[in-house]
Length: 233
Image 1 (cartoon, rainbow, N blue to C red):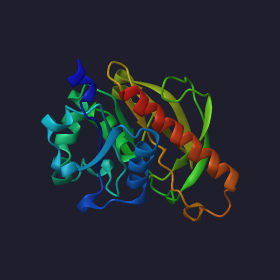
Image 2: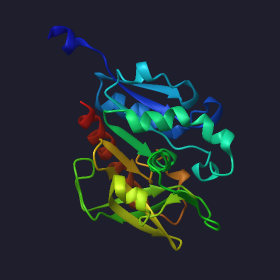
Image 3: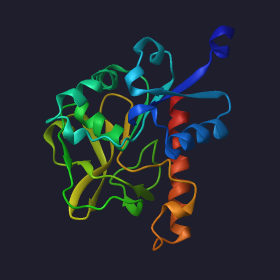
């Protein structure tokens, strides 16, 4: 029993950015976990270096955003092949997964849903108020402010998506109906299109967004990440 208590608790952050690039968002994820849960190790691993044996010893996974696009997989088989190990991991991993933005789209793709791309949306760090159809253990409130930064998206009426996931929050973004939060029906996969690991510095946001709203989104994101770590523990 003592050996079990002393076993290192690790959450792996799978970095989906190409070339080992580690943007501020990933560093922020790492730091938030370290600050709130000093006994939990947050380790970053590149998507191209996935080792299932190692990851299966973890208490949870976080799948990050990316500058790549899941929507391009249908026309770019070589890019899709680079993510096959992560797609298989999503399907088979039994512990909690938090999938963010690109990771959210990858989770949908792993279970047969289509990922589409917006044709005219200008990507920036928008903040929207998101109303939940259903709250749960990850997002315990009925509405939160969230940070959006995406052009790829998953539609709420996709049949394969609805077969595998409960869709807890949708949002109309520039005329596109998008799934912003979904939870797998049988597995502890929590999947968000928005970024809970918001930028720290307010200058990353458009000047028309009030600092108070930015702070609301930051706090909501931190609580979500904290709730996820708690679920892993």
